[in-house]
Each structure stands twice: as C-alpha cells, then as structure tokens.
Image (cartoon, rainbow, N blue to C red; front, side, top):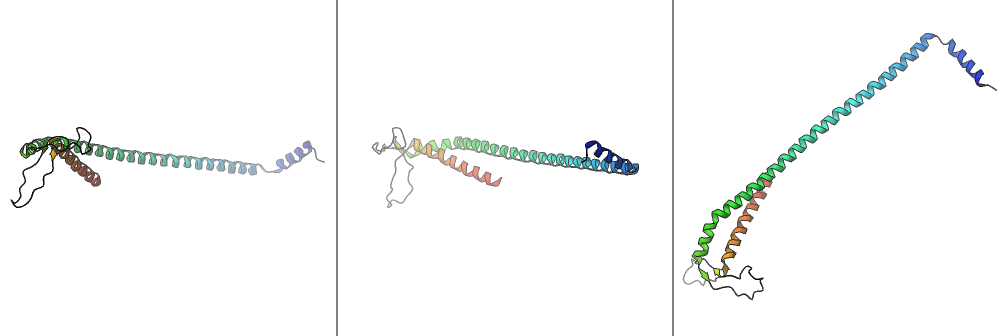
Length: 170
C-alpha cells in the first residue's frame, strides 16, 4: 500500500526530472490560453455593447417616428375640429335663412311617442317647393331645431369623412 508521503515523493521525483524548458513551454501555453480566453470575452463584450447601441438607436428612431405620427394625427384632429367650427359658423346664416324662408307650419302631433322636447315636437318649417302645378307635393313637418341638428350632423359627418381620408393619406 502506498502512503501519501510515498506518493508525494514519487511524483516530486518525476517532476524534478522534467526539464525547465518544458515547464516554461507549459506556462507559455497556459498564458496564451488565458489571454485568448480574455480576448474572446472582450470581443463578446464589445459585440454586445455594439448591438445594444444599435438596438437603442433603432428604438429611439422608432419612438421618434411614433411621436411624429401621433403629433400629425393630433394636428389632423385639431384641424378637423377647427374646420367643423368654421363651417358651422359659415352655415349658420344660411340655416337661419332657410328656416325663416320656409315659413312655420303647424306643429307636428305630440303623440308620436317621442320624449318631451325631442325632434318633431316644435313648430315645423319647410322650404317652398319648386314643382309643376299638376304635381302633388307632400310636405313633412320639420322643426327649426331639426334643421339645425341635421345641418350640424351633416357638417360633422363630412368632417369625419375628411378626417378618415386624411388618416388614409398618412
């Protein structure tokens, strides 16, 4: 049986027989391997830093594009609202003139099941019809408020159409 001391003595004797240049070569090989591993790790770190910088740059560019698009849409919405307000003010005299020219007719019946004060509950107006004398004209009662509401809704619908077309153009 071998004891630890005997084993150490034999290994020590073998190691003393190895020439010094072999030890120097082994040390050089170990240093080159460690240096290579270090350089490889540095290369990975540089590549990671490079790609992280690229990703950050692309993310910043993407965010800038999103912000620009959002601002353009916000501006389009403001322009649309401004145009509706301008059209409403520009059409107000024509609507009031239409109501005044059409003349008031008798009030629509209140038993139509509408809520109080809703469409059809006030005095109606009409525009003078332009038809042949032989043609029978059917007149539908429309209140002055109905004309105003319809005009406003038409302006809003046209503005919404313009807004959507503006979205498609972007």
